Amino acid sequence: MGSVHPFPASKAAGAQTGFDRAEIMRITDLYGRMVAAGFWKDYAIDFGRDAASFWAFRRTAERPEYKIEKRPALRGKQGMWALIGENGQILKRGHELGPILAPIERRLLKLVSG
Figure 1: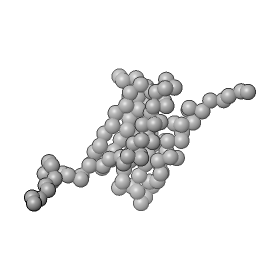
Figure 2 (figure 1 turned 90 degrees about the vertical axis):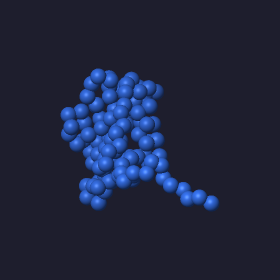
Figure 3 (figure 1 turned 180 degrees about the horizontal axis):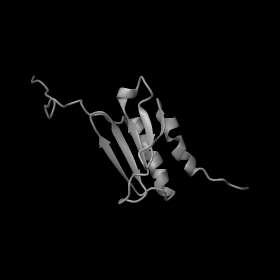
C-alpha cells in the first residue's frame, strides 16, 4: 500500500480561520431571511489568518451594512464573535454566535394585529 499525502503540500496549511458548518448555516439562514425581507442584496466572505468575516450589503456598490467576524484569538478574553456596523464600530461582542446575531434578527420581527 502507498502513503497518503495532503494536497497541496504547503507550509500555510491550517493557517486559515474559517466558519464551521453550523456557524455558516446559521449566518446564511439569517442572510436568506434578510434577502427575502428586502434588506440585503449581496454578501462577501473572507477567510484570513487571524479572522473569518461575513459581510452583508444593502446594495453591491455600497459599504457593508454589517460584518460578522470570528476571531479565535479573542476566545478567552472578550469573545471571539463580533458584530461590526457600517462605519466600523463594534456593535456587539461575545462568546456565542446567537446573541451576536440577535440585533439583526430583531429587524425581522413584525407586529401582527389580530
